[in-house]
Length: 392
Image 1: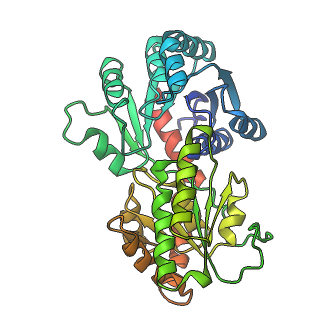
Image 2 (image 1 turned 135 degrees about the horizontal axis):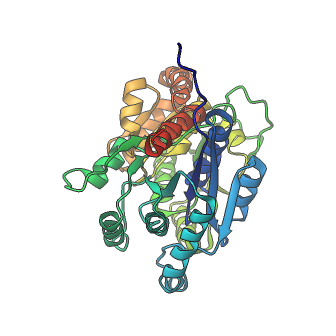
């Protein structure tokens, strides 16, 4: 008698994020949750803080993803927020444990090395847990906290955004995770489609030169200073008349001083062909009407925007972060700078300005490469992780 094929057991995952401001991790959480529910029989309940999460809440609601909004203070150097983080630490762990117990999930998924309260709460609730590590740099204030929590209530598994992340956290250490999955940041290739037919979203719509775009919330980790110095170097080479540089990204209140230093730097270097576009929700349109995409990040594990630019069939220049170098060299879809000197980046970017030369082959390869990290594939990887942890 043939065995009866059974549908996989439906699972529930609680996904906890202590940072409510919308960025790459929040985009990943929402996008993967939609596909997990539609394609893999896995329901997600996102637990997020009330403060600063208005946009994230709207995205989750529009996507039909369940959420629980509670008070959660993020770890930060800002004195008032840090005081709240320390003072309410125990009560917020208890609140998280209460939510976990009420949902009764199969797995708890926690995001970021510094977001430890969810890990402690899941451990106290006796639920299987996976820690998602998505960076390659821990500030000094985070390292001891991560190490203590990792030893006292170790995760059942670790998801890393890149192989370089795993090396950063665990190479040479005795405390290796029980199970690991490397899942690159996903890209929605249907949304980031070069066949888009959208009007030009740039304020200087009539400009007919080369648009160079960088996307990322204003933050020193993104190293927008290097982007400005790159623009200055190309202007000094006589390229300025045919080039425009754009930075699209939210300016959070705590990064306002950094933004002001960027403006001062651009003024001091007379980089007049650079525009800060602020927070944008039309990134696919911005990429569609850009000619070259540049990532100047310092410590990222795997920049999602790089994959999105590849998906939009754009020539991409990036610093050597995450697994970008390995990806570009294997698929010949972009250029990576070995160092962080503006002169080197300018040399590489000049190779991409001619759309009929080296850049043409890269854009063809880029779109094909992006499909390997499509949101459907990422959701399947998450589903396999959750089912292995849940033992089904």
